[in-house]
View (cartoon, one colour):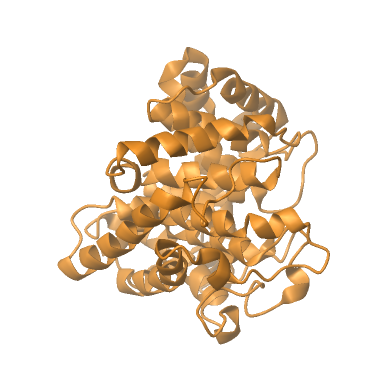
Length: 385
């Protein structure tokens, strides 16, 4: 797949959400599908889920440079729709308000993805907003402080919203950030992998949440504390690189990957760690960027190309590859599915970068299984660090 193919998928993800949002009709148009036993509050947060997760994935593209005129025009149109929507979605008096206030704990999750997206696309999504909108969004993040996160990856959601406040001139709480960082250091199990809380979970949450949020929290506000900066310089950037190498090896020759663990309906978003390492130029030396592009392209195509992955109105349907409603756990709604956009982080790279300009290359599983190539042995991080 070429960059233009990625853009086609990105627009297909973004346009239904952002057009509806810019008209104040996201809740109605989303018509959130969900598990029969879903918590009612979960359905209420579905519009915030869709906005936050979509912007977390496409934020780097919205601020990308050196695009050709047609891509830039499309990108600018979609970013403009997002800014329009954020203006009234942050207004408690508007019918389309995203319900940051209250006690629904899921809002903490989805506001963190929104904060992540605003940081990733800061120059395009945050900086141009009028000051009253910025003030309301700061207040929205402050309104989350009455919610207690679970003792697992959820600690990073509070840390992300507080990091967003710090990075954008708001009153961020450094203790919430520090607590999340310290706990994840305690939960590190070795070889680029974190436990999801005190226990290890065989799923994709290291990529859905843990590595991406740890990485961007430390990159955005690491300089505020020497211990945070050391965490980034000496540990997290090394662990991210190793996690990306492992992810690339998990992609089968046909673009499939192990059907393992919770939240499989996030589809290609399961490879956010690999996508982020590519975006940040932190791929391990043995992974040429064009090889990673080829691997991620295969996953995107495998999970998003089936016709049944999409509703007739072009919103996503619950499933991994097609419509598979039984994969939708009780916390999954239509809005949840837009974490798939986080596979598209490399759109933030210039089209002239090695990721986009290099020729297609077979990824590791093709080289090993289909080509019988004499590939180097894989090794864990020294001392598991």
